Length: 132
Image 1 (cartoon, rainbow, N blue to C red):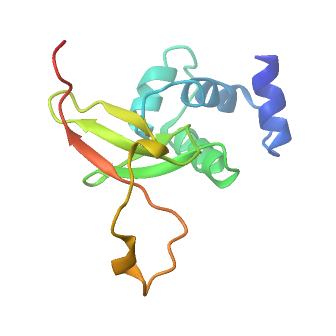
Image 2 (cartoon, rainbow, N blue to C red):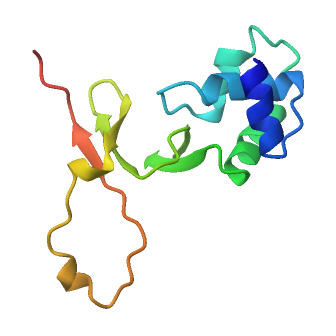
């Protein structure tokens, strides 16, 4: 908890109990939760947490660079604690979103994009996990 308070303070975020509850979940999960999923996960241990507080806290964490928003599913915004360059794989059977290392995907034909100055790219792969 002490480290989380330090992280929030370092990013100029006042560590209220509600913000600590939200940040404590979303910054340390490998999931890509929606705001509603964050609320459902955190509210049992923080009953004073409101939907508005969850949205405000998530947006503040994004604004301060601790989270990124991703539009990986149509009409759904998810929050990603991995703020480094990476791609995503969405399992069509389970809906689970996996982080894929940036170097695992190589764009070969970027010469055809000569009219664009590319500063970043992100690929979303879809399919299902192979059974082992």
